[in-house]
Amino acid sequence: MEPKQQKEKSVLWDWLTTVDHKKIAILYLIAGTIFFIKAGVMALLMRIQLMYPDNTFLTGQTYNELLTMHGTIMLFLAITPLLFAFMNYIIPLQIGARDVAFPFLNALAFWIFFFGGLLLSVSWFFGGAPDGGWTAYAPLSTAEYGPMGMDFYVLGLQVSGIGTLVSGINFIVTIINMRAPGMTMMRMTLFCWTSLITSILIVFAFTPLAAGLALLMLDRLFGGQFFIPDAGGNPVIWQHIFWVFGHPEVYILVLPAFGFISEVIPAFSRKRLFGYTAMVFATLVIAFLGFMVWAHHMFTVGLGPISNSVFALSSMAIAIPTGIKIFNWLFTMWGGKITFNTAMLCASSFVPTFVLGGVTGVMVAMAPVDKLYHDTYFVVAHFHYIVIGGIVFGLLAALYYWYPKMFGHLLNETLGKWMFWLMYIGFHLTFFVQHILGVIGMPRRYFTYMEGQELGTYNFISTIGTFLMTVAIIVLVVNIVYSGYKGERVTTGDPWDARTLEWSIPSPVPEYNFAQVPQVRAMDPWFYEKVHGEGNMKPATSLDDIHMPSPSILPLLMAFGLFWWGFGMIMLAMENPLVPPIVVIGIGALITFGSMVARSVKEDHGWHIPVETVKEIEENNRS
Image 1 (cartoon, rainbow, N blue to C red):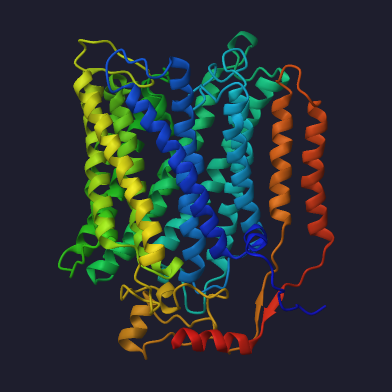
Image 2: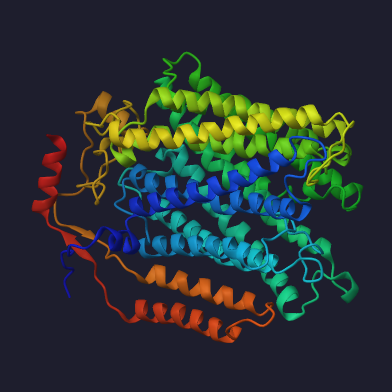
């Protein structure tokens, strides 16, 4: 049966059924932004509570729920999908591919992530959100101490984690198998390298998390005894399982940000990236050592001096490959013709901010020092210098850099610079003083403090900084809306005079990406063709009909089924549910497996964009 041409359909149905990596990227961007704003509002509420001594703005229980949900949403449901948005959109364009390796799985991964996040979020309406901290340490997360909100934590992250794991596998296969002719591994952009290594980390890190969550689910819903000391279990096992995932998770988040910076800095320094080969191997070393350091989160558990010493040394060693990256970014800028637009401001500010977070990381990597700082705001400050000072500034740089490629118009630079300075000043006001709070001895996770402890002034400054960051995000949203109506339209595929392959095609990108698969002849292939070639990419294939995968509603249905399956499992812990839990579990399983069967038996050969249509689109893009 020959593939057919696609029929016209409504906009809503198009987005619900799309398997186009670019549209899925935008779905990730929208969902991640919603979760980011949600978690940011929670952070603002917590900072208002800590603004003054003995404040009664929040109760202790509400504070615990906000604390747990803020950390969980930021790491699993906000930053990760925002990174996936750029990985989805940019990776196929940078390697010269027309889509990811498995478009159907790509859509499935998004919808599973989204419905997993939705399952976690509805906990507010069923007796309260999770309250055991984002790390869910046992016994706080066991049935004896953790209310039903923790069941939403366990099942929500189980479902969402499946989507993340599927995405990781998809990106690995895409980068290894879908590269254009001539695109060797050592000609790939550093962003593709960091995305590949991140995806490998996802496969190896999310599997122990899934196992740990399964054990915790068995404890909570079926009377298991894995983490219950009175029954012979051991709560420290959860810490090992969680941090075997949790520390690589930091690099799962920060390595793509390293890739963003490695694209933006060369583009606006008008130079190639300094020390490309060293950067690749430094990334590999960081990924390897990332799995060797998990127990530095457990220096106060009592593992003994030998274990503490080994993990302390490996934790400090990871600073060496990270330092290589820092110096290579600086050497890239050295002597360059730097353009300090918003993207470059965010990228260049990333470097000193991340260094400060790294320095405090080396400090707490020393077990005796960590003994003093472990449960204080010093660790909160260190972590946020990595996550916000590193990852969020990297995301902002990527947004301003690739926005014209994704949406066909530029973001306003004046509003962008206002956003940057408000965010930069607000960030340092918020978190730098938290180092001082930690040294003074303010414990983390406490919802209040007393007068006369010398904590009030620093907490007040920290909260003012949070308000500035909030204003910065509002300015960013205003910029996006304003630029959508008034922004400068991009009339060329390359508004930045950039270097890499994605800038060789029109903005916004056609559905098929490349009319002809390009022939890559050097690293920074677009720059090479502009300087040494004829100003356009040489084709490796003839101009012909382009085969495209068919859209499908099945990914959404499978994820919807998993949502109800997970919700039915949670209902096992409810008192007097309106519907028997087994019914809800059965409906969810039926929807999921029914969709899988439909996918298996339905023969679908995709559809074709006729060559005449391709020629017409290309001609319109050139005119």
